[in-house]
Length: 295
Image (tube, rainbow, N blue to C red; front, side):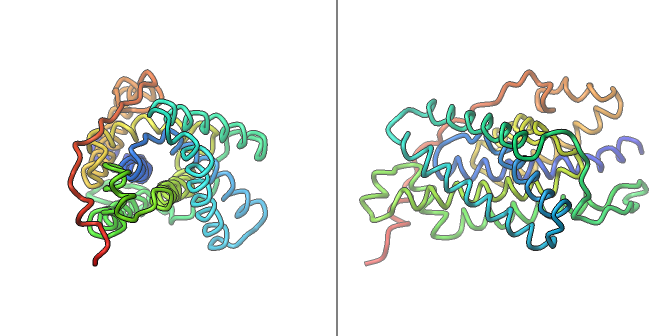
């Protein structure tokens, strides 16, 4: 019963990993770049949301919408100001640019919001309910449902829509896509904006559970990248399932071995040696013809 209880408690962490990892997979599939700044974007957006909502008394909907828009703006700026000037450089330079953004966003959090650790109020219902005979917070169940919904909608957008097809084609063969009339800048801006908006969403929903800390979501990038790696940086569904499994297993191991026990898992979080898995580019697929405009 104790194992089941802590497994259910791990749904919250798993959902956080899932939302962040979905954004990582989208950016990789659309641009071929590993975005190490995903967690840092979520952290900055979370601080801004609770600054607006709790300290300045903005209505919940207004603060929520403003921060999601900020996430979109950050994503678009990442491409226009960082990635586009580095277009002719190697992949390593682009990855280093995302790491530089991590440092910048952490510094901005401390400078603008004062840093520090705090526990903000949740935007989700927090009462305790009984599931399968054990008590668990309703906010974790809601967050789990939101993560599944985000993964499902994103998988449909990427796999079934024309925009998703063009995005994947651009990643495989940017020159070929340009010859067929597609703008790499437009596709890249859309990809980065969507991925960053998911980071902002995760920051708003998750920080009441893990606490607001300049490093809280930033260090989640380790289990997030592990989940994305299990999904081969391609399958959003597999990545989401892996993220939930990682969160639940980590919670169970922590319950039996103390707060540091989960760190012994290579997927558990910041204590995992700070190694981030590296994805591999997938073989080129012939998507350009299917994505090309009609006659």
